[in-house]
Image (tube, rainbow, N blue to C red):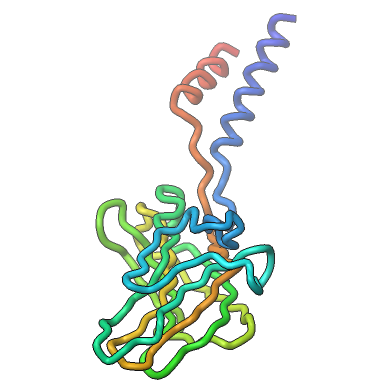
Length: 213
């Protein structure tokens, strides 16, 4: 009876260890991608003279959407880069070179000349710097008045020890009459994410039990 119970315990520990060592699984790693917290939780904000708000007026779905706004510029106003970042996502858990898909909904308008929208993706190093930096379509995108769904398939860089960062930006150069009013919603960032490894002590304990058996 003792041997049977001991063996069952050892097998249970082995199952736990195996579960912890599971292979990577495709997951959405975006934080607050639908802005349903009602604020910018999970996003780092850099308005740089622009205006950033969460609105409940005409979201793509759910209750809220994000609005990045650059007021119409005068002749003496400086350039504005109004941006938010979902930064350093899943650091230490991503696979270099893995496929990654970014999706989002966008609507809005541009006033005058010089207004642009960029969606950018960075494969971050554990220290400073990146191993890969990309811009969707390699240039600016231009909004429609109605919600439009976008999808971007690409790959991670050769070093993603610092995770991945998605940057959404609307900008105006120092051009009189330039202004932007851009809305984002339903942001997802899907890629392979490694399982969190089982602590070494559990492996050691489990190995000991197996040895005794």
